[in-house]
Length: 70
Image 1 (cartoon, one colour):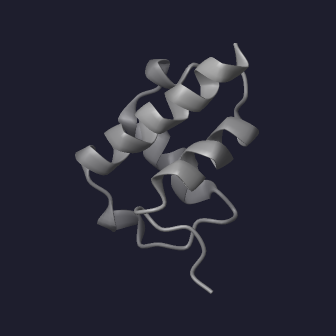
Image 2 (cartoon, rainbow, N blue to C red; image 1 turned 60 degrees about the vertical axis):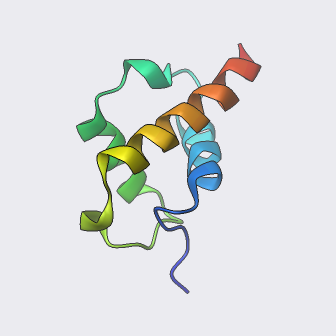
């Protein structure tokens, strides 16, 4: 099974929140965000298939989830 793909924006955001609960998502560079996503155990998509738009959507979804914990 492939697991999470770049299109699983909300699921990736939740996984990042669980793995990095203290991290403010708006203070992470896209290069680090990309690295953290592809390092997720559940992630199974092509690392090169990301785009700035997908990273931004994941970052904003993660930020919304993160705000609820603050």
